[in-house]
Length: 304
Figure 1 (cartoon, rainbow, N blue to C red):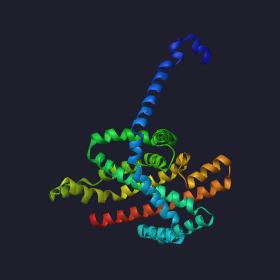
Figure 2: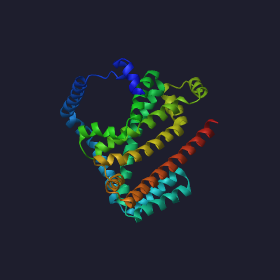
Figure 3: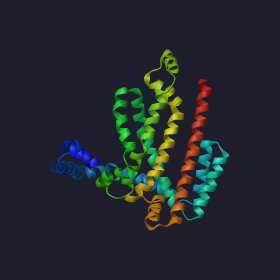
Figure 4: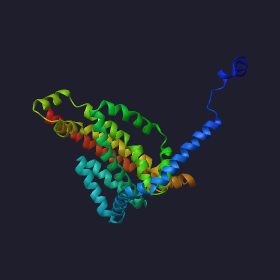
């Protein structure tokens, strides 16, 4: 039926008018050659600029891995309790991490924990200022939003191509890929939280003669903290998801084990490492949510 219909219609209507193959090949070659030239010209400079990240990641990873496991376990449980003020979450953290150590995944879990911690810190340091700029400028929002749309819809494997071309294989390239993938929620929810601050509260701040700087740090950011914490929560979740993909370019930890389990079809190894990733995700999720609720109640008491 379709073939008969195409025979009766002009060729232009049946065959999509694609760009000439020779022209497309020339375009791809030009872009690839230009990118490779950029890498050769600035690759060493970018490597040196990101060297402090490598040092910090190695230091944190060594701290987690080389410290006595009991000290790390107790410290992690204490941090979770202080942040969440929830005994059940703290007990669940202790039991989950203890079980992870019992099945022989303690060191890999610490490597993954160090990676996610550094990625989250970078996302916070970079994402919050961008979100603030977006909240205070419609033009900035109109420019950044399409970029965030692309970052969130681009397949995660695609991020690995330019990162590997520039930095090669290793922890820092994986770190950069994870941050690029995980930072959009941090930016979006910071922007949203500041924009949702009650206009009457801002008018009251203006009436007291507050400057823009004072309004931002004394009113808008404190009231937006619960939403910003939701952004941190989502960034952590996406970092954990991307760690598995980033294991393809040299990031160790649980992601490497999952990748090996997929390659060799080892169901048990894949399940155990997946359980460890889920446990870490639940710990971070419950802790950040509890802290966000505490901030929400605190702001309601102060401004209620």
